[in-house]
Amino acid sequence: MRTHPVFLRLEGRRCVVVGADAPAAAKAAACLRAGADVTLVAPTLPAALGAEKSLRHLGRDYRPGDLQGAFLAFASTRDPETIAQLRDEAARERVLLNVIDVPDASTFLSPAVLARGELTVAIGTGGASPALAARLRRDLETHVGPEYGPFVAILGAIRRVLAPEPGRAEVLSALLDSSLLDLVRRGAREEIDGLLTRVGGERLTLDRLGVALGAER
Image (cartoon, rainbow, N blue to C red; front, side, top):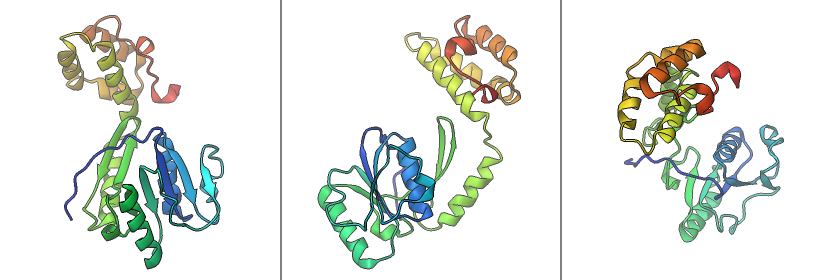
């Protein structure tokens, strides 16, 4: 199955999740983290979502009309009639639909995701083997550790601070080729500040950039 990878901006958009099992709860939580306005349609509220005050819960089974006004929808069901209704409504309302583990009923496929702060690595197999995608994600976790979160935050903050300056690309390239990632991994704050100021000037310290290392969060 041929697909095109994208990262969707969900902040403020209506997303609907149908189902109450663990995969549905995980999709709802992921949409909430992305800033979406999430409605869960299920007879029961999953315990994992009990503390999510911003979640809207419709305590019943899916009904046609539930996707109206939505941008994105996930559904965890194997019922052929429900799947057919979801597909028809999603097509009519122009809603992106993912029926979990039913790729032929989906207009998009949800990848296995490794997240480190603003860094997101998404792995897909075109629906052929979600288990392989999940295994590759676990393998990547050993190589892309939690230090990548603050590392990406530092690079992003520098990119914003130096936005109007012509030398921004050279500064960022030099930092990517430097020992910055290892220093972040070790939590060496003073050495990080020394490196940043040498490469990019006195404005580029962790405090001035507003970036906290892992242990400081």
